[in-house]
Every structure is written in structure tokens, then in C-alpha cells.
Image (cartoon, rainbow, N blue to C red; front, side):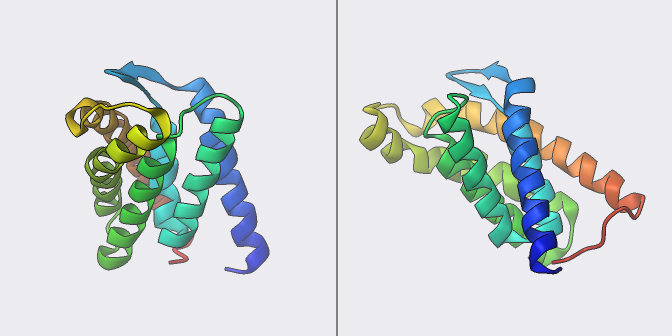
Length: 163
């Protein structure tokens, strides 16, 4: 994939993730669930690989925070989930493993990483089990959406695998 096409595709994913946060969200325990972020992570991981997926997750988190649509907790969860989704997809070439990587990366590892992050930056002393249910609900629902979209797109041969 040439550089222009890669950057354009990444920009489209960032736009979808940022706008999707305004359109589709729901309360999930102590936080709000933004499943479109996780769906974009899966789609980017499958189509572009782990590196671009992490950059996309970072940019979505940055824009959401600049627009007042998210918290600083969007960074670690989204980026870890995007990396693990891309890494597992690269290892197995299975869309389901990309979705599982997103759910585990964000839902479990991201929620554990957020504890010291929340303590230092937000002054919150909440433990891992405080964040984990919300992160799991958000990441699993979004990963399923992403898996469904990628499966349909690949089934119709609308994109080529560039990983």
C-alpha cells in the first residue's frame, strides 16, 4: 500500500472513530462505552496492521479529548487493544482473533494499565475491578461490531489484505 493511500485510510478510520463517539455510546458501569472506537481498532488492525492501528487509536483518543467527548482513559485502553488486535491478526490471519485481541487488550490489559494512569493523572484511587467491567462491555461490543464489518467487507472482496 502506498503512503498516500495508507494515510488516507488512517484518516478515514480516525474520522469514523471520532464521529462515532458522538453517535453511538451507552452507559456501562462507571464509564461510558464507546464501541465504535473498538470496532475501528479491529477494522484497522485487520486492514492495516498493528502499527497504524495504534496510531489511529491514539489520534481518536486525542481528538475525542480535545472535543470534550472522552477522558484520558481512552488512550491506554484503545492503544493496547489496537496493538493486541493487530498482533494477533498478524500471527493467525483470523478476524476472530483480532476481535479477541481487542477485547482482551482493552477489556483486561487496558483496565489494569488505567489504574496507575487514573491515580497519577486523574487523582482517582479506584482499583482494577472498578474499571474492568466497563472496559469489557465497551470493548467486547465494539470488537463484535468490528469483526462483523470486516467479515462482511472481506466476504464481498471489497478490500485486499495489506498486512
